[in-house]
Image (cartoon, rainbow, N blue to C red; front, side):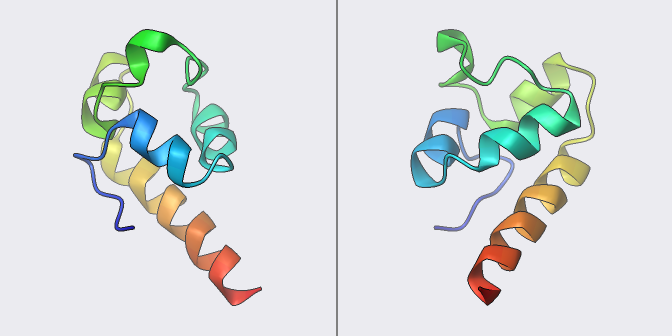
Length: 69
């Protein structure tokens, strides 16, 4: 699965639950909130005043690290 800024929070978390840790480390502590599941990564970052490009890069780095194992 390719994760982009348009990927919903629910899609990302269904794909890999470990992404929740990355989001929480970035400051997004609402990953379990039902209203966040339908938001895109970009929308969720905007609501929290976060840089979506940075968060996306962190998610991709996490996933790339898993692929190497």
